[in-house]
Image 1 (spheres, rainbow, N blue to C red):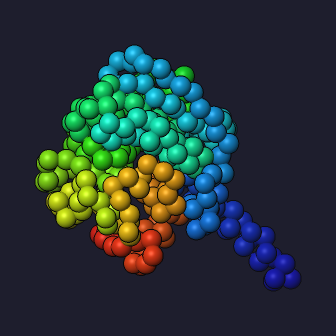
Image 2 (tube, rainbow, N blue to C red):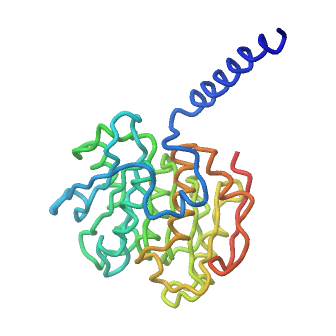
Length: 282
């Protein structure tokens, strides 16, 4: 009889715990993650895409990738800039990869492929404003949960955008290039991804000092791709996808289920030359 009475009580506690967990973080989207799920080319959400042709006020147009599910609530959003002389085609693989994990993603073209990093920063922020205020998917987006990414000069632009808009929730500069080396005023959780064999933006003069200059109190990480070039972010890369998704989930969605992939730091190996962090991110 005692066991029979305890079972309903235990079930009630489990249900209450699950409800409390969901209530504590209303931004969780999708099932509990696994290594396989974050390394996959596609996540659990079906997606669609819509073009934003130029001319557009403040940037060069692009493509919006978004979950088709309208029952899960609003999603966080990310704008991604290509690098010097690049176009959205160079970073297009990130669009469906990240969107299918439960984000609205905007891969943009810049006004000119020659635009310097600070111009790309302004354009990333203009793209986010377009997403949340004018785009056809604006009703799907939580405008308080936004992030930026970028390759090369676009990565330098992501750093500058973080300074200009500290309300952003996450930034991921990919093999970033910028003449400014000190980013001590950044207040946005930032993961810098460098490449060991980068001859365009060598990690010793770009990614490493960028990371080191970020405040010690900031949620930050430095991932250096093993035996990779400056252009590693321009084609599908499991390591970039895995840790970018984890970072965006952790800080845009406040989803601590992804903490396990960031803290403790992943070990050095065939894919990772070096990883630095200031865990825990709690």
